[in-house]
Amino acid sequence: MSRVAKNPVAIPEKVEVVLSANSITVSGPLGKLTQPLTGAVDLKREGETITFTAANDTKHSSAMSGTLRALVANMVQGVSVGFTRKLTLVGVGYKANAQGAVLNLELGYSHPLNHKMPVGVTVATPTPTEVILTGYDKQVVGQVAAQIRSYRAPEPYKGKGVRYADEVVAIKETKKK
Image 1 (cartoon, rainbow, N blue to C red):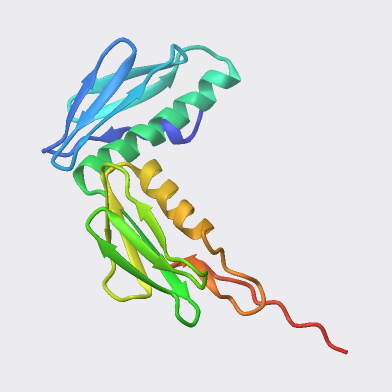
Image 2 (image 1 turned 180 degrees about the horizontal axis):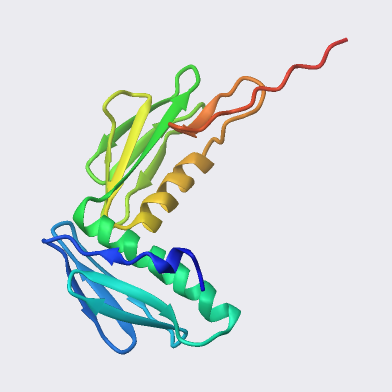
């Protein structure tokens, strides 16, 4: 059995969990998320916790029990607390400006880039070189951060580009004659 699946998921006070035959729905103060279920995992709600067990002894069932436990834990955390991803712009003239649901980026190209935020993701720019993404769906917040980073990924010689706040860019040494 998966070691991850052995830990039950605790349900906070303001979070409501609905288990049906083929899906699990988690709703809270920040939003509502739904995850489809397969027959490989058995879910049991015991008071304010949910436990996950493999439905049979196959390797797939064991792996899916841990995967589903992690997904449900992220859903519970997302609708109660939310997720934040911070990006940093490194480079001369690189700047960002949030205007509602649109992030305007100037990344050294001849034209500005406008990135529209999906539903459930909000963007803030406390300084022109910082971008903070917040939302209740961890997968969507991470995907938006990856899309923004892909506009100008950090290059290895000077480190210029869009990077995650906790990312360390290994700077290469230039070629010597």
